[in-house]
Image (cartoon, rainbow, N blue to C red; front, top):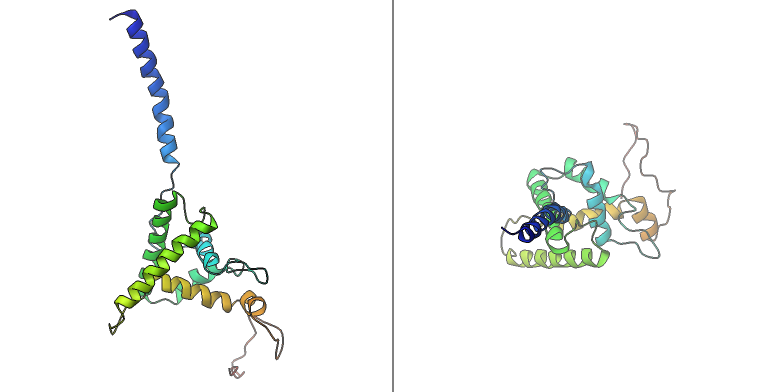
Length: 191
């Protein structure tokens, strides 16, 4: 082998040795979706982002994120949802995270607001098509987007922000109190 050929091949070999790890680092920066087996406190920021995409901030009132909708959704998921709905909701959150990774190469929370809205509009259309398909069925399971949207709306409009700033609030008989002392001898409020 000629000395000149040897030096060229040596340079190419050592150059590729330096570039290959850099290429794998660039590929390693792509977002990998998380496969959740249950929802935890670490999922609250994602749930907040989903809720604030459904009910965003407006000029007159803060959105769902300000109402801590993620904490509410996690509480309802852990304490109030039947097991079947919990599984549907969890699989839906995993699906949304995977779709965001495939579509935007980032998590849902890191996507810009127009991308988040676009993704949720696609999922909402799928949920409507799912409902139409199962319209004549007696017992149907809900679509995960319906659960997500329902939790967002109920959580937001039962929060102090939703009750006092998003709605026309008239403090009768008094101010808004989220938690009130209750004695067993007290009668419940009638609505």
